[in-house]
Image: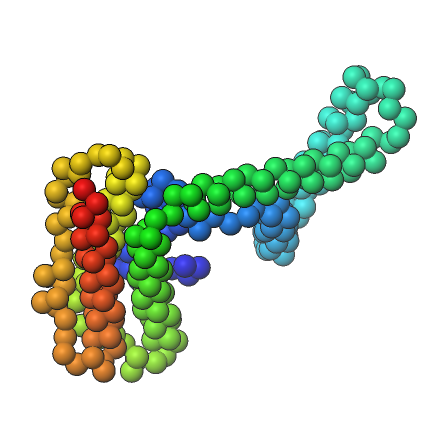
Length: 243
């Protein structure tokens, strides 16, 4: 999330990095385009140049560029004095060649990781990943609702917010537990699962928190969290049957 979220939402979202650690798979991996970080760096530099320390930033960037070019020029004259083209032209050519080679390498690396994911993506994992997306969407919806409230709309406040957050915490625990269990069974197909604590879920507690007034915002959020938990419980039972 781009802005600073409220304290009770911190740590609730299941990030891509955490998801990859839990599954030991390149889940939601995206192709790295080398021009993107360069553009981001350029935007940051321009932003700082427009700030109060603009002159200092310009000086540092220019100094780094000149220093790098001088070092490159010295290396060429010492070890490749047979090259006749100007060193600045050679530097540009090498940068373009290096950038193209790097992008090709990143593409094939990304395709390889996609193949690994495809070969290990079980039906249970697909459903759990979908539930993670739904879970994260609830948190994002709450964050957007908070922004609308902070913009001067107090009528959109989520009632009984503490209960909603508690339900999300319970759902998060179940999702993490299910993902850990799926990974154990996937990576140890002949292993008899003995870690029974992984199957202890909080569904009963979450069900007890469910409210009847589904028309209210907090009721809708609690019911959505409950539905995710039910899906997770179903997948957990399927995983247990694989023992």
